[in-house]
Length: 313
Image (cartoon, rainbow, N blue to C red; front, side, top):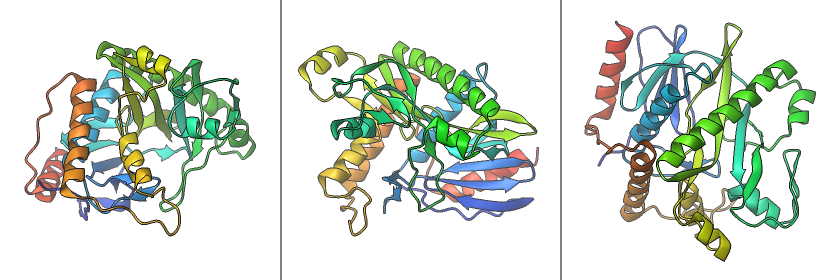
């Protein structure tokens, strides 16, 4: 299996390219061509090996959910001309990510366990347990860091005080975030899953706010299996989940958390294949569709041809 970890396209009318942690974004006139590569990151570090089909999985899940939530808020998607590509409206992104949590899990739980009772300005009650459902979902934003830097927790008050987002726009972001999380939770429940937490990014074009980037993928979200959740929670047992958290847990077990001086553990073929299979598992559970592997022996030429054909229409 081939993994696409690097692109260097030169599309007609191309103005610039941005190579993110896992996506390469090409600006062409007033459009963005976003290529979901097979790179994988954790703790804000790009891991040394790509994961075959990961880009296709993320792009197709995001594309499906962008379509399924278009009635809630405008989104940037215009078309998906290739399994690994979305073409959309070029927006100026807000410098914050809207993270919404329905359950005390992951980094929030790690902070809580270490004594924190407030996350991003949101006060948390005493006596909560790992994987416990919040009375209502909470929004815990982060800054949108430049490449190589870490996103940082930030409160709504700090965002407004620093002028990162205007009060009027932030109210819209909050409204969209909660409505999208509600829809995502409903869709997950229909498939026997719980949407635990996720992040949304927004941007602006011609004065209008759009949902941008990905939505409800395993890179941006965490899912539990609904079946067995209550029993496992009552016993204090780990929940079986579908998310990238298993990659972070594997890294932590092998002494890596993205800190200076730490070395990424060896990614054997077995590890890589297991990660691919976990991504496919999430795709099939959350979409209800059988995953169809696209031809991946000459990914660069296939993508270039498909994008050029779309742009020439």
